[in-house]
Structures are given as C-alpha cells and as structure tokens.
Image 1: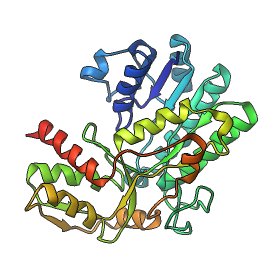
Image 2: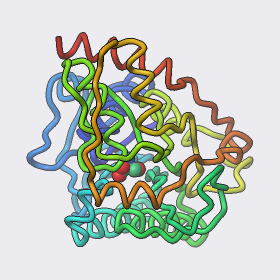
Image 3: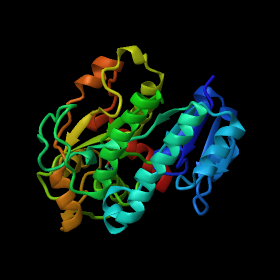
Image 4: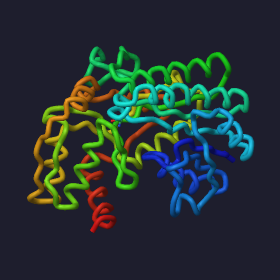
Length: 317
Ligand code: SER
C-alpha cells in the first residue's frame, strides 16, 4: 500500500492528483501538503489528511514523512515560467532548494520521488519539431534552468544514493478545476473560460506559435503510471517526454468555434510570454515513454474541447 505526501497539493496539478490518488490508494493514505494561504478547501480538505509542508523547510517535509510513514512524495511545488521571470530568486529557492530538501528527506527515509519537468526545460537550440528525448537542453528562462537542474539532481540521487526518482516533462496542462496562473501555456486554459463566458478572448501568444499541450486527466494518469511502472524496463528516469497534442492559437480557437459559434479572439502582444513560447519546442517525441513504460494519451484536441466546455458550462453558467 502506498502512503503518499503531495507537496503543493492545492495547486493546479496537486488539487486534482490528490483526489485521484485518494480514490486509488484510500483517502487516509494520501496527505495533502500545503503552504499557509493556500489551505485545502471543500472536498480536498474533508476527504483526507493535510499538513503544512513548505518545500523550503526540510524539517516540515521530514516531519510529515515520519508522521504518516510516507513512502512516495509527489513534489508539485513550483512557480510557472512567466511568474518565475518576475521572481527568479524565489523560483530557484522553490524549484531547486525545495527539490534538494525533498531528495534529502527521501534519501534518509527511503521514499520514491516524482518531480515534474516540463517543455520549459528546452531552449532555442533544441530541435523544435519532434524534440527527441535526449537532446540539447539550454533553456533561457529561470523556470527552465530549475527544471534541467531538477532532472539532473534527481538522476544523481538515483545513481548515487539509490533514491527512486522518476518524472515526466509535462506539456502545458489544461483543466477546468484549478487555474494555472503565471505560465506561458495558460492561454490555452483561459481561452475556454472566455468562450464559455461569452467574452472576446485576448490572446497573448501569436498565431503560428505551436506548443505541446495535454488535458489534465492524461497528465494525472502519466504521473501515477510512471510511479507504478516496472523500473527494470527503464532506460531513462528524469525526465520522460510525454505528448498528446500540439497546436497554435488559431487551431484551438477554430476548434472551440465548432462548439461556440460566434466566439471572438484578438491578439494582444505579450513580449515576455511570446519570447518564452518561441524558445520552447513545437512538438515533443515521446517514443521513449511509450516504449519504456507504456505511455499513451487518451485525449486529443476535439475530445478535450468537448469535455472542457461541458464542465466549464456547468461550473460558470
Ligand atoms: N505550463 C508551464 C508554463 O507555461 C510549462 O510547463 O510555465
């Protein structure tokens, strides 16, 4: 039986992953770690244990691991790419200092660790189309620098100390539950909110800018399946490219228009987000994840759009 601590349990990924893991492993076995000011609410709060766990505080991580006899840590604490550019020191403190704290606790207490990497770990020198698993990673954002460091540090702890670290490079994640906030791919979430509210969407990313995206149910499944996978088949650990769809603003806009006729979009240039988006891949090659642990996405743009609109209409209207 897994006993899991989720650090960042009230964030974009954490709020959904916590509930999904509680459904699989039993509510009392999944501890929601949060920071003051981001307390769990509603079902997330009522359905299982929660603890204050600030990733920059190693003692808090160790105390939660000890109290609940944790064997697996999902480290989901991070600042997303655009907000990290505004607060680069904090992004490093959380992304790298926090990961170091987590890995040290995992080393001492024998825990497995999942830490997401991202399409943001690549840079302008990376091949942009069908970006290979093993390729140039020279990101130009602090977010990317923390992600590449995280991949290498996680591999180091596996090799040097035998800590069972595993991870994926997430595309931009799209969900109707918790808003992302501060990312470059967020436009692909915001556009659905505008469509459902009947507002004109102001798109910060230029037409023709392709990025990998993924619907949250696929992302959650990836995070769970990689931690359950047979490690003997792995040639990689940190971090696997995973992919399901790649589009530019025109493609997602036109897809939404199929279901929301008359929906309007205009472009409002955002130099920071555009520069970040331009430095990231257009589409990832996820062959290694498919071969080494059976990764397979379920949602394409059409299926995601129908599901997003259905749930957002129920939530907002
Ligand atoms: N969604 C993230 C961002 O835009 C990338 O992984 O920052």
